Length: 150
Image 1 (cartoon, rainbow, N blue to C red):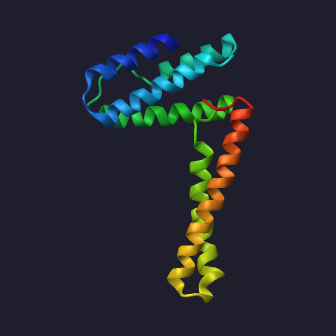
Image 2: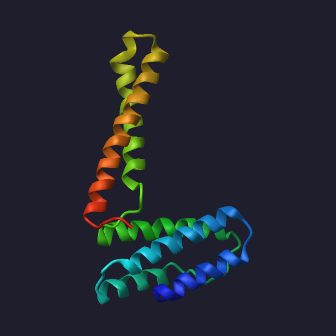
C-alpha cells in the first residue's frame, strides 16, 4: 500500500464514520503519513514503510474498528521509532512526565514524609511531573532539531 493510497483510505474512513474517537485515530494516521511524505527518505525506506502499512491489514472490515486501528497506530509508531528513530510530537514530554510522577511519588514518600504525609506526596508528585515534563520538552526539542520528529 503506497503512502498516497493509505491517506486516501483513511480519508474515506473519516467520511464513513460519525464517531469522533475513530475520526481522531484516522486523522492521526493521516498526519503521520503526510509528515513521512515530507521527510527526505530513501526509496528503500519508503518501501519498508509501505510494507509495514500493508502488514497492518488496514483494508479489512472489523467489528471493532476503533480497537483495531488503535493497535495498528501503536504498532506503526513503534515501528517508526525502532526502525527510523522517528517520534511523534510530544512523545518524550508524555513519557518523561509519567516517569517524573513515579519518581516524584517515591521522593515524596521517602524524603518529604517529614511533612504531613499527604502534603509530602503531593509536593513530590507535582515536582516530579514538572521536572519530568521539562526534561521531556527538552528531549522533544532535540528530536525536532535533529529532524527525528513527525
